[in-house]
Image (cartoon, helix red, strand yellow):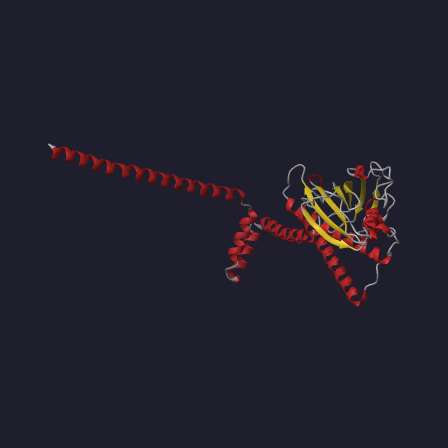
Length: 371
């Protein structure tokens, strides 16, 4: 009887040991099948999405890429027959798209705005030819300037002591106010430079309503802007920017003041002359640092209603007739980023970098000529 009991126990244990592994293996196989099905569904979904997003130009590009590996004896007859048998408009659009993309990439590197619009192929070809002519003309002018610079470039004509007189207090050491925190820069810093000009003198040139340095020396004479208009500060207009503020005026009240302005920017190869509307805001104002932030709207340029250009200039007192200037830029898309947001950001950074550089170089030239 004991032997029979032991045999029954042994047989039961063996059955359990045989059943349990089978359950585990079945579960593992089911999991593997589910994962395989998920991968298959993912691949099918990717293929469907790729097929939906594929355009006729993509198909033409793939076919031409494959023909590259064939001998020209076979390629030329195939292309000629296909072009004359119904594929002419497709190939024409592909060529125009390819050339346009190359031009847009060139423009993005150069930082110019793109005048995007849908036109007939004849007008588009004429437009691109004119654009290329202007680009080549610009390159020729640049080479001519470089050659003149090598031969001895003539000094640029200055308009007089628009930077203002030197301020006695700027020659002393600089001391930061207690608990001073430098203003934050915007998303992209386009220029950071030390300038051999006193802080109070520079503050007067940037902010005072009587100063004409920015309007005439920088905007009009250096950058070629026309119809430059600059309004008054919303308060304390006669006191903002003064080297020494009257005792009864609290300079802390200057923070937050605004003034409106506008200027007409000249045309380029891809955009017509357009007006920029600018709002200047004082973010920091004391005898150690001032910061001015600009909100610029350009509704006349392509996609101009989709973005706002923010720029900021922060100037810090270094003492001994020297200042530190940081210029930054940041785009804002109030209605969401458009398809050409990358081109807008690239053009904005490149364009403002040229503007920031023009400001700093003009300041140094006038300071050297009118110390």
